[in-house]
Image (cartoon, rainbow, N blue to C red; front, side, top):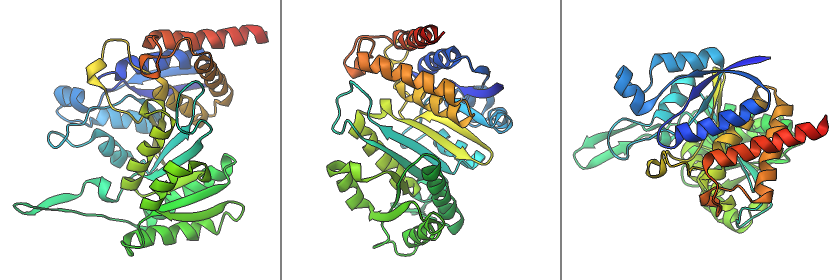
Length: 340
């Protein structure tokens, strides 16, 4: 089956790590036609908007996109392109698997959990204004609809992927109405999944428990801002954002992306680690039903990590971006040849 996929190279190191990932995904044999589009600063310069309609339309039509990191100015300039894209496509579920990789020093080598982040509301939506000079108000909105569907998605994901427990993370002891509603919706949905354990943790206690005993968690479901922070914390437990894939799922489509930044300081030098976007691409293949090619790409990647000969500089190795990608492709080819 042929798949047409929207490809957004992104900023900084984005084009380099996207090119490496495309090389590996194409080597799996999956028939892919890439439809390249742009967002952010590049689009602002060309189209006068950071979210051009041609890009949004492409994702809606193809139902799937692979996106490199986008630059977001801090404290000034245009608003987050990632937030805008999620709003435009109603990509309500942010899925971030956290799994330790071989040969990567980390605190918890056996860690394997998934962070499910509600993607459309809460404080992270950026609804804020100046009340009077020197006073800014940010609005936190939590709805029954959004809370219910992220809980539903989390439990369905757990059931489909053999996960045993889903934990809601909140601050309902203080924000009794907003986080209270989120928690209430969670437990209503949990009743429909009796085979899956459900519990909840207050956000500050959850962060402490993640540092002390992360193995107690399986699937974590959180509101938008908590999810943004906790997913980065979890990435730190396995070696950093360069090893953490991500997906944004909605009814109008799915966007797969690395969760790290655009790293303009090393752009164009061939030093970037494409692991996060590659793992996101492998998630994308599974989303498309291409499970066997996804398995082959993942095994080849894990084998390269296990051997440790072609790791990038951030992982203690000396391999360039393209050398890392070539090693994975060659590993797949060798495995395929041996199987004939």
